[in-house]
Amino acid sequence: MGKFGKEFAKGLIISNPVFVLALGLCPVLAISTSIDNALGMTLAVLIVLLGANVIISLIRRFVPSITRIPIFIVIIATLVTVVNLIFHARFPDLYESLGIFLPLVVVNCIILGRAEAFASKNPILNSIADALGITVGFMLALLIISFLRQILGTGNLAVFGIHFFDLPVLKEHPIVIFILPPGAFLLIGLIMALFRRTGVMKE
Amino acid sequence: MSEFATIFIGMVLINNFILMRFLGLCPFFGVSKKIGSAVSMGVAVTFVMTIASIATWLIHNHILVPFDIEYMDIVIYILVIATLVQVIEIFIKKTNANLYFAFGIYLPLITTNCAVLGITLINATEGYSFTGSIVAALGGGLGFTLVLAMMSGIREKLELANTPKSMRGLPIAFITATLLGLAFQGFGGML
Image (tube, rainbow over all chains, first blue to last red; front, side, top):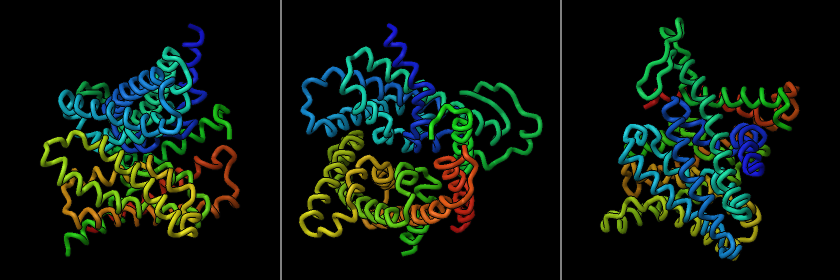
């Protein structure tokens, strides 16, 4: 159980996929305009990464190493198709707002990266822990960014229609740049600098 | 003609692949340290995007739609792109050795570049015509190359600048991208 916990914990901070490894940046920047989107994307990544890690860990002894990458990609693409259909049927609003970034989970470097670097070499239980840890790390990064972008860019906090609070001045005069694309670059740059400043991230 | 001009300008400037749509960020931060390699990467991506758009347009409209299996698009597109990249690599290796060394390591990396899968999905969702999707791919690729070249020019100068210690490397690259993005935001009112 100690090994399971260790594999889980490393994805949170030390090898946080977004801030430290700088992987899978495209969806993080693009869909972090609201917390709803961030949670939806996390769910999609969780299903695909967990499924891919489990399947690849199970078949790792039978896959010839020369054709492993195409095989991994087909497995991931199939899982993404499944997620796409589920979202289309169950969460039509999320499906609309995530747009092409839902199918683009296929080429998210985090998922193929974990399949290649971890699941293809490790037993199933460790692969599950790895998938969960990386997903939570990904969620943490997405939540921090989307929370800041939503609050600064719109002046209120509401998640899935439940309204939490309004900020006094920002409500009337939101800093619109934060929900526009450049605001995403700005926030990630500042957070990365903070990670380095505090010594979590090596140069 | 004006329809194609609208698509082209929209793809290059207004909905720029890197700064506005956030597609292809890995090469944007990975390969943008030298201007030469940035331009090679941009040309390689544009080339693959255009060929992939032609191939997936034909597959989408002549196989997926008639057989009513459009939900299979993700699996099929990614396989088509991976195969195309392999074929292009072999073809260039056999016909033009200089070009092969110029593209070098960039070609295999393109398979997992979200700009390529992105343009094929955009073509399908926007319902562009055959010519329209080629124009969109060329425009998207040109916009990608343009921003990559601009970024690498700035980063070459940044190497010499006295940046604060914790901002060096990636963080300052993101801040630079913010400023570029703000400038490109100004193109929003063009059309």
